[in-house]
Amino acid sequence: MRLSQGRRVKQVHLVVGVTAIASWGVVALCGAWAWWRISANPWFWRLLRLAQAVTVLQVALGGILVALGHKPPGLHVLYGIVPLLVSLVAEALRAASAQTVLDARGYESARAVGKQPPEEQRAVVLAILRRELGLMAIAALVILVLLLRAAQTAG
View 1 (cartoon, rainbow, N blue to C red):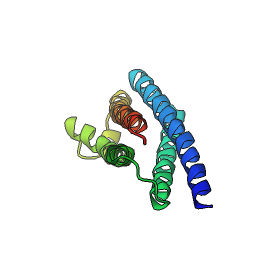
View 2 (view 1 turned 135 degrees about the horizontal axis):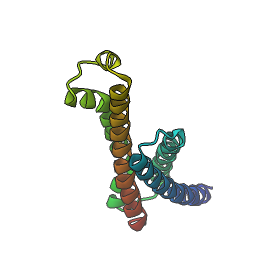
View 3 (view 1 turned 120 degrees about the vertical axis):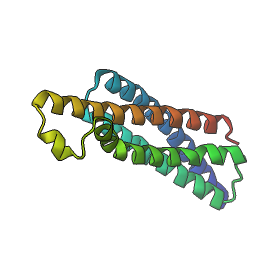
View 4 (view 1 turned 180 degrees about the vertical axis):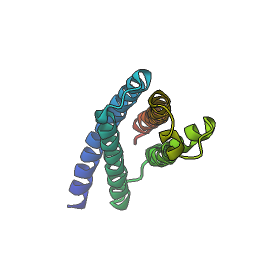
């Protein structure tokens, strides 16, 4: 029974892994396109969250495999877990993006921007959006490469 469960989990792990790779590829492309166009497309953010969820599921399935006795190569585990860390760091940097842009433009707060003419407000919002999109697109590309390496090192 345990061997059968292990095989099934391994097959699901493989399918979810391919899904994770494809998801991050789409996110990287959509993110680069949105950054280029400075577009606040809500689908990019939905796809990003989906890719993050698939990656969490992938890591959980890998953990189940290890608990069932499967011994993957060490680099496979590293390449599989690091995307979670990259995603967390990228989210932290994204959260700080607005303040970074405000500081660079000499504004104390968003309230100070609100006192500016509409064209300046729009310029600040677009700068924040572009920074956030760029960070997340680069993170998606890094995660894609890490997951591809994890697939290459799978045992």
